[in-house]
Length: 522
Ligand code: C2O
Ligand code: CU
Ligand code: CU
Image (cartoon, rainbow, N blue to C red; front, side, top):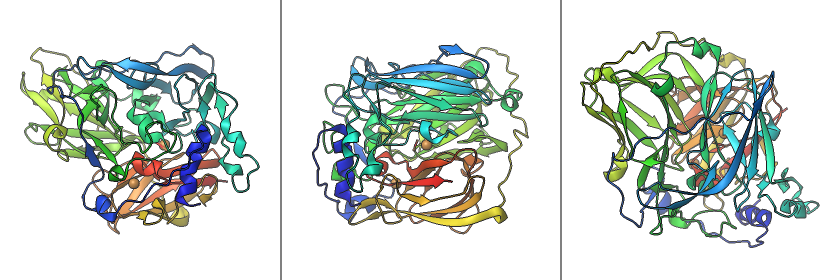
């Protein structure tokens, strides 16, 4: 499948019918910068930092529960939000807010989430990090068409030679996703995953937290309640009228992709945490659990607290994408790529009363070098939270059990744009067919930065460039950042569910421009 045909899919599915030829940009745009992406500047004055209060997304209540299941409903809707003070921004939201409501579920119980689409565009919901049967996973052509739309448009492609697989399982108005809960406690997130349009969908607000809890984690003396904070980091740019600014090739979103200059990723000049620009939070002199999620399209952060507490090791990492680590790992700084999660504990009693502790992004410059501020209070508080030396029994996958070794090269090809093993995405063509229950060794390699994500099962990073794993590779992961010209090796075991799943680059501009592949578990 060539690039032109790929780009045509989005158009046909949406019914606009237009095929656009998008030029592949010159290599200079893509390789001149050490880091992915290009800054898109806002067209209005940006607010001063550390004025907006940090908000915590509301927790979604189930509409009903029974012996085994909890049922939830989310309406995807346009909402007018005040993100910048005094400025109205029209967003695409889950339930009217950005971030969407936090879904909190219990390991061992099924969460049944019904989504209703009242947006003007088709959507696909994916639970990132979810251990999910294929029909609920959010395959990118399984569209949920807006309520009131005519019959699924993709059926027009049925019977066209070679196009059979392009008809996803489309529904109009409502779709129910079942998440069986056969997974350990972890910080997951849900977001839009529509073929060719994940970048603009997430940029306009389609992202929320999904936390899985379990007994093992519940028994630990970790910070909880108001001291357990999910923090969604996302950079955005705003147009003069307050709308989200995004460099789509086609403003009507009938044709996927961004303009040539932004093909290596879109970076905003406003840093949002839980939807607020450079917010601040009053904290007690106590332990806090920060569930850091990078929900940015392309931006990499190197997070550091400033000032550092004396003695350093400000961040005590307790968990990664796939839940608790076996034992805590300390860091002065955390490098977090798009879609990664770092679950850390910070002890603000290491700071004197009244200290203003900024969370900085050492990869940013100017305004993007700042993220948020914690203002340490002087009041006396109780804090019985601690980080135990042993957190969880984590099974280490045994490399000797790997029954196959597969290689996936993430790189740009002159003819086809962003590719895996030389080819742009073609729905229905699997690059790997692992057997259910087997352990495989997967090797990823890169040209420029690519955060590589695998659906269905978490993996363990066993090495980088022939050496051991890096400082941020600990634990069960579902997304791993590849630096330029790097080879990363992981072990993954495919469990419980057969069917077709995705692996892809989570730089959303790369993803939308075809850096995805199917694999089928049989
Ligand atoms: Cu966070 Cu396939 O996605
Ligand atoms: Cu995912
Ligand atoms: Cu990439």
